[in-house]
Image 1 (tube, one colour):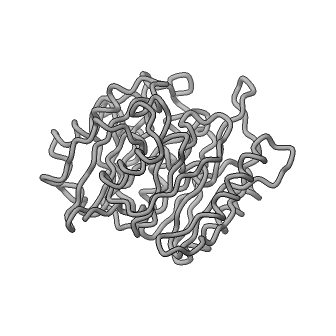
Image 2 (cartoon, one colour):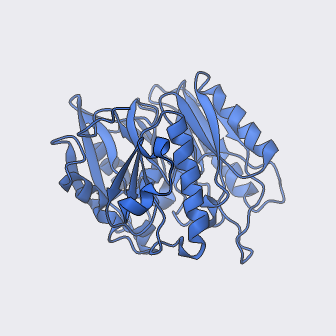
Image 3 (cartoon, helix red, strand yellow):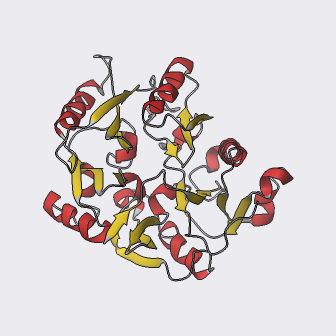
Length: 346
């Protein structure tokens, strides 16, 4: 019996990677490092143990003050870029024992170099960072953490565009992708979204940009109320399909709409995939990406309280992070309680 753990399960830490000059952040490196410093400091202030990959520990430690630095585990390791959601380990329970699954990562369907990213989990295991015996090499199968979401009750929500794309696993059919998720993650009920796409998204419609499962049979989804916005029709179709979905017991979901951020463009005038669905939820705190849009930011932070009324909701300015076509969830991977060989002692 396998169970894909929900994001709000108790954690031991959150995995991030610091921008460096060999990443795609090199053209705005100081700004990018300041962005990650902001993320790390906010999480540490909320009691989160941060595991920070870096090319040079001594240099990385200088970025933070002593109080923050002592709550960070710095690990020197090679990596191509900073999107740990898609190359970090995916945690399941198998017969009540934790397993860290190291799936293959090929740069979102061979779009970007990922040779170093694809070895990160193996290196962490070789460094004896993970608890003994829980690492499993699944790299023969391509699967990104941002492409799947779960309610922790056997249901997985994903998208057809990503899971069945030709440059991942040779282009699976829905039936084949369904079988893989059942076998590898223990899913009992799988929902494939056929609609939903954000301009500027390099991931082929990762689910964490569009819709998120939450407790009490709730699905948060990215909506669009502006009929003149190019996203309007596609997101309307997505909403219609979500309304047809049923949970494992045959009941409809309670759909809750998240606002679509006002358009944000890069220096070439191309729209960036800003979304509030890209939040990170931990056991007690939900970290919400914000985009310097007070009305939309506040609405998104209030909306998620519907499913997480006891959680503290903390906004983190991600206006730099979005410049590389990702946001807060993309940049983080939770490490559930029991996955680390040496638990932090703060």
